[in-house]
Image 1 (spheres, rainbow, N blue to C red):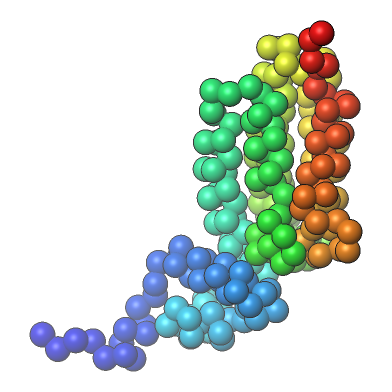
Image 2 (spheres, rainbow, N blue to C red; image 1 turned 180 degrees about the horizontal axis):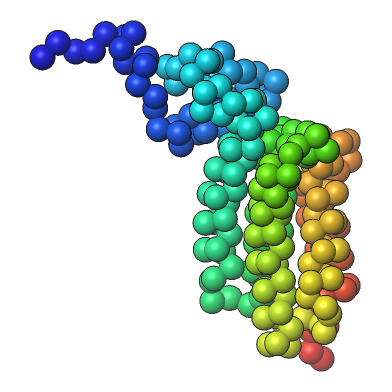
Length: 206
């Protein structure tokens, strides 16, 4: 059988996950500005027009890539939070997973870009963003409620505390992701650890 020509192979769309993985790899290696429909098309063997057919706009591509990245993080988060260890240890793992690895973290670069375009997004796109936020929030509320019920944490309102803690995490995450001088990941973890110790953890017995 004669193998398909390069032109014919080019017309066969790769799996959508492969496109999203290629987009994420481009952001990780060269930054968000390097991600273009034309460049991504060359990476996956598709025309920019073909990509637009599937994703309609670059904003939709970014949001789809973020959702794909979040699904992977969600799997990792579920595994971390289901470990048979104290709630405080799992909370620390949650915080470490939440924060960017460092400046230009690809996942957080995506988040910042999606947030930047959020005011002009349609209701469907904003609902999808809220769904991502909601998953992180629900998992944190459940962890806090468990820790309180086991008397590992102080008696706080889990939902209100989760809202405040995530606001703190978002603030430090932006600083880390943009490389704000004096606010690296290690320092952010120190500040967050102090806040959690002062406001949530029970003092060690005697």
